[in-house]
Amino acid sequence: MTNTRFGAAAKILTIVPILAAVYYNDFQGWAYAIFGSPQNLPFFVLACSVLAFGIISKSRIMRAKMELSRTSFMWGLVFLLGSMVLYIYGSYSAYVSWYHYESLFLMVISYGSFRIGTSIVRALSPLLLVFALFSYMPFSVFTFANSYLLLAVCWLAVGLAVFKFSNFRLGSLPIPFSMVSLALVSWNYSQAPGVHLPAYAALSPVAVLLLLAVPAVRRLSLPPSYSSDDSCVRHHMLENGFCSACGRKVGPSLRREILG
Image (tube, rainbow, N blue to C red; front, side, top):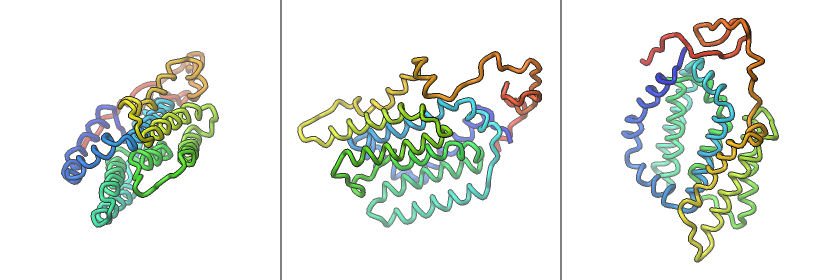
């Protein structure tokens, strides 16, 4: 199967009306719970920032996996059933909004398995798990009397996920740890009586990504890339975009994509 950038974007857009129809009554509650809460917003930004860091650090690999990913009816069905169970159970629970949010997350993963493929989902799975856990924190369920305990839990969860995703490279950990620390500072001050942080303080974790513009930080945090000297002089691109001589990805896929 081939997923061009245009084709993948077109497939993703087709799920928007489905989600709008199924979760129409939940969007307002999610917007209020995440963007209207000084507790949840730093963690939502943290989850998005960690996921963005992972995609940036392996952007070429992610593009290749997306193009060559194969769909899986079995995994799509498993995630779809999980989404349905969370939606139905959550409708009768005291935490409807949180269960429906996780149901939405599994619905998107299910749709991606059906339409785009499971290769990129498997590659991003550690970071997707972090996103599912931290993008919407039900603080009414999980209460942390000690902010240092929450910091340790977040460091451990994000650190293990990024460590696994980066193929156990220690250099990949400082930026995610900095994101977690900034998110926890913003969260901690939001609990203090009489302290009112500006709204942009919750966006501080994503600002850490700007450090990747510094060459020394980029060399430390991101996996090493091939230099031009490593290029194969006998490049002959196959229809899937790979060189038949050296096996490197040298161009986009030339096969036609079936959008369905």
